[in-house]
Amino acid sequence: MYRKVLNYLRGQVTVEVESAAPERVLNLCAAHGIPFWGLTWLSELRLRAAIDRAELPRLRQGLTQTDAVLTVVRTEGAPEVWRQYRRRYVLLAAAGLLMLMMALGSTHIWAFQVTGNDTVPTETILRTLEKYGVALGARSRIRQEELRNHVLLELPDVVWLTVNMRGCTAHVQVVERVRPPHLYRDSDVQNIVAARDGLITKIEALDGVTCAAVGETVQAGQVLLSGVADSPRGCRYMRATGRIWARTWYEWTVPVPLETVLKDGTEPVKTRTHTALDLGRHRIALPAGDSILQGRENCDKIIQYRGMQLPFGLRLPVTLVTETVAERAVYDGERPEDEARAEGQKQLEAQLAQTIGDDGRVLKAYVSARRQGAYLMVTLRAECEEQIGVDAPLTITSDTGR
Image (cartoon, rainbow, N blue to C red; front, side):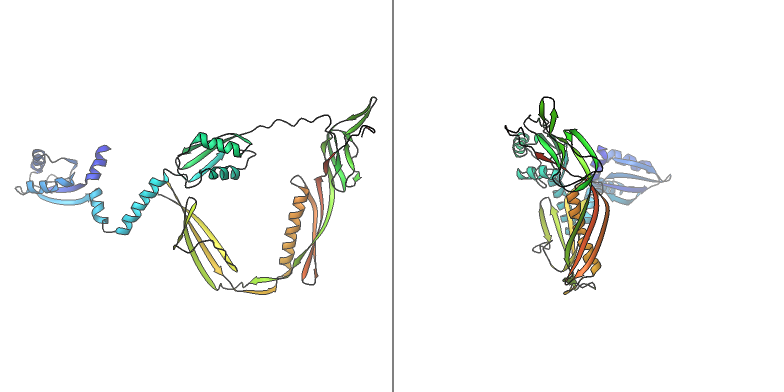
């Protein structure tokens, strides 16, 4: 392997020699100290071999006194490559730039991988690291102790953090704080009351006195689980804990304007393409001076991100960003009622999902719309099942005991 690399760097020439006595050619090479390799006999009078590129003139000189005919089959190696491409300045510049990028890429951070975080968002950890100099495009030399102290002060829910470099990727390992369970004092008494009107469908009482039954209709503010229990020795106070599920009903209406600014759906007035290179946290617009992703009104945008990597899989720290902007003519007009209805329905469904929470579910939903002047009144009627129990602190006085 070493010999092959050396021969490639120095350059080698494959030659064919035809002579009445080919053995004399081999003896001549040995006498003049001309090394050869890859010897192949093509016939009794013809052979092929490879020699050092620098030894070719000496071999030609030695064969002048013989009847041998020398033919150069091919020339290989780094010198030949340089001879072919030395006048192709653009290609050489690109190769030099590629080598520079590879050298810089090996000493910088181009990707992150965060593990061990369950409660602290990954975005929060990355923003904190960026605040103290560990970000995309930054040098991979990291002062672990100094960085850890800053991050632990910034993120109280993190008790340990380390950043290990593997290639161009920073692997962030996090250990989060395990918070002890909250211990309630005897004086922390409360009721569970209904957050809204509903029909009870399920009760999960962990502590407290149940004041409602499945199938019972309750009103907002009504006590569902009481934190006061009667006993032979008087009243016993506790913290009512549990979850109460109920069937609830909603009816909301939202006005959606029909008059709006519309885009011409025909061919665009003008189409422009902008290109930029992302190098870590820096963006270089091509051509320089025209910033990509600028806010442009009345246009449609298509943005494409393309990473770059070498044929053997090495990822380069460069991303090609292409933005195609199609500008269209606009005019004042009235949108279709179906479009306005869909927009109103989307708003109402988002409001409903936020109200019933992640644990709630929609059993039935009906959407209707009617026109009122320049607006379309979109109405949502929904039947849901959700958890309606909320904590209600209970104040105890000395004279009444409650």
